[in-house]
Image 1: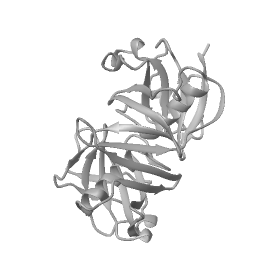
Image 2: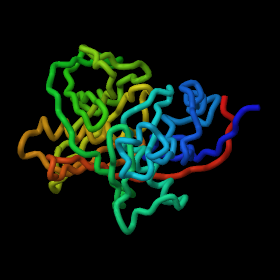
Image 3: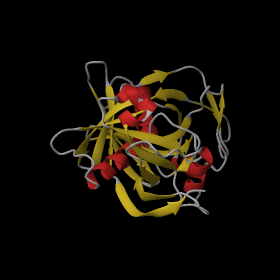
Length: 288
């Protein structure tokens, strides 16, 4: 008899997840089972899986033992990912709504493969401190269906790898065909999410920068939103704009609008991401 598990479906600006509670770490989902759950025609449908497990119950949680809960994030193809910015907010929403954690009296700390991430409430819903970031200006060229010529990109690491490409117009952004995976040369050893961005005109209003973005997520394909990709895109445009660039940004993605802030910290600047999180429905499903 097939094993049946309870699940909840959630999303952050259209970046959607199947959430499975497994506090004691007794559920071992294979890559094929994750892919089946995420299949949009034969499964529940999602960009990835969020397994809710105690840090003490998972080997990877040893590095995040000061956070009770660990976000075991898997891409839609079953592969494990370091982090998911939208996923952290949906994960927090689930913990708070189910009474597994609180966030009002103190920030909520959750473990990820990219370390502990701290969340607080914000005007948009939840804000997560993604931590320090790095910018890699090594030469990388991106080919994508719909681009007339290959374009240069900049590498941004916010706990997981990204390559950000600037485009010249919203028309060019809209005409991209991201049903095909962009090709990066040289290819990153572990792959990367690829973001295509267009700055607003004017770029800055009232001290806040604004951009539009589309993303091809590693192991998933094009998604309506990617939280870490939103942060990486704002950081890339901020980097290109130079020292006078603002530290606050709004980023429009197909699934909505998110906020990005860069703030000083003892170990160097941190990037923070804010946006909504919603739980849509719950049910039970038989594992393939």
